[in-house]
Amino acid sequence: MNQTDGERKGLSRRTFLKAGLTGGLLVAVGGRWLPLSQALAQAQAEYALIIDLNKCVGCRACELACQQRNGLPEGKSFIHILPKGEGEDRWFLPVQCQHCRDAPCEHVCPTRATYHHESGVVLINDKTCVGCKYCAVACPYNARTFNEETGIVDKCWLCLDWVLGGGQPACVQACVLGARTFGRRDDPEIAALLQRAKPLHPEFGTEPGVLHYIFPGD
Image 1 (cartoon, rainbow, N blue to C red):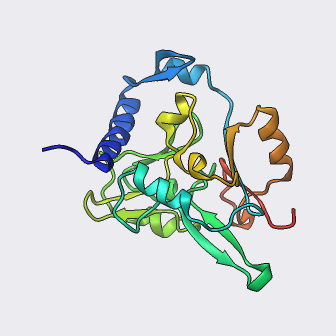
Image 2: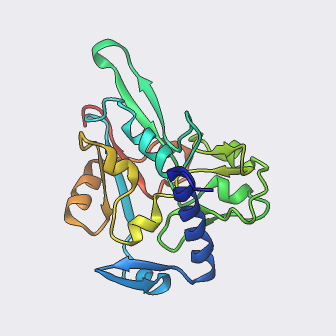
């Protein structure tokens, strides 16, 4: 039986996580295939994804790209768009996993399926996730999605296989208006944007590690 594109993409994600946990993954860096541990040694800088809400028009291209990349059912995505304001003051807030440094989802996971990758990205080991949904309840950003087929509570993994190979997350590639900018914190362009950007709901105390926003008017 032939696999659909979604199934192949889902398989590649599972293969990435499995291989990453066992240390056997090879990633493309600078035109060469390197072991994950060696690639990480060359990529110690933290990542940042900055979303400029002055440019976001709520077109949902990022939602669709995420859904297709991860082989999710129709209507499911690791990104959800929240409309804000009214009339001329209307704007849109895309929300997804913030990859928090102090992640509540990680603290409550009874099997430690949720964990921090060496890059700072929060991942899920689908081999040990039991679908209890404690993480979904604990996440103040409502960033978890329960997959009825797999029984796993899933979320954004930042397309980490592409990122470690020097690429961009699917949502960033899909944003034709340039509302999303992704890169390393030591990149001058990223560093300049981070001077303007703010974390979402800093009052939650979760210390978002990757996602930052430039809010309307800023």
